[in-house]
Amino acid sequence: MARDAVRSSDADPRIGWAWLDPAYRSSADRAFIGPKGALTIDDDGMPALVDAVEELLRDPRVRAKWRDDDVWTVALSLIGVASTRPEIDLELAAKRIVAPTPVRQFGALANMTWESNPSTIGTVTLATMGSDGDAERLSSHLGLSGAASQALSSHAEQLTREFGPYVVASVVSARQERLAHDDFLRSFDDLIGLTLLFSSELERHGIVSGRGATNRPGIRGLALDRDALGKLLSEKGAGELGARVLSIGDWGARNSFHWYSANSMPLDSLLDSRGRALVGDLLEGTDAIAQRLRVAARWYARAFWADADEDAALAVSVALDSLLTGKEAVPGAVSKGRFALLEREPARRAERFERYDEVYRVRSAIAHGGDASRRLQSIGGSRSMLADARWVARRLLELRTVAAPETDSDLRDAWNGLQWGTSSWTNRPGMD
Image: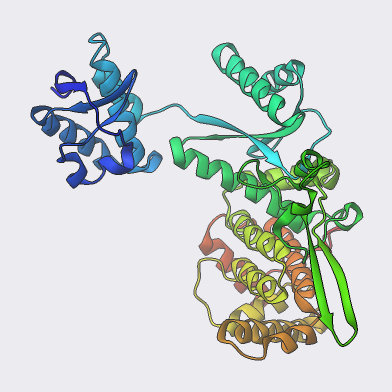
């Protein structure tokens, strides 16, 4: 057996991504990280290990929840522990790889404030952490106890020492390791994108498009928190947060100062109770429109945080495509027609069609290197296209209520119903 062939090694250990490669597995320097240092497996134990891992990787249940390299990492870790603890049941451990329990991840956030109690919006839980009491309240909100609650308290204590009070997000995933982290990032990005798409409070809090991604909320350490960095560099090094540019020309020499603002996103202020319910519903929704809105919200956020008008216009064009076509590959005339059909007033549908035709021409000019800048300015710049996307998103919310399309086929039938007059809009307040 593989566990009997484990021994210590002087080689530099590698995790699963290296063990995926048969050439590395057959090399004399193969090694992995064990409980007390580097370990390796003798040649006579390798066939059993490879057969066991490859059998796991052929199981569709495993493929749905794990990356191949993470399965290798976990398998090696188990073999390493089992080599010194013969009581460990490797067959039972393999069953836990096939049917693992869900993973809950926590991440500190940059460029975000949250002044409310711990709250769950759809798939994402948010809270402010600054004391043991905050960790206890979040544990209580999530129903954590025992080792899980203690792990959260220890994590919060460490991060509070580094950051001071901070905002944390938490997401549960049925997938494992890096796939779970991917789900964490996706859920958080969806939350931010949907907030940008549907909140009516953005400008009141100084959150406007076209300023670049400097203040974009993200996972701390992956995204830079300029407000926190500014406090750390208040005495020395603050120049890293601004650009002083010297210009010399016909008008003499002058210094200009370029500064990206450091406005955190006050998420609990941007979403009232109705907004939280809406975004939470869309984060969890499995119907065709909820799925399209989540995809569109990601592209809308890219457009919102872009600092170049043309980049923003191209991203919001993709968001519009997601809203109007989804998984279908349809001609431009169909998407223009659907844009027009979302207008309640039939007399204005020709105007809507012409508007989308202009947007489509701008998109083509950007994508194919035409006179994009002039065309884009002629229709009101990327901010006018962001407004178009917000309008479409609100109309699709209404269509979701009117037609309740669960599948892509249902949604296609809903579009056909609007086109042939077998479905009609109902006036619902607050949707414009």
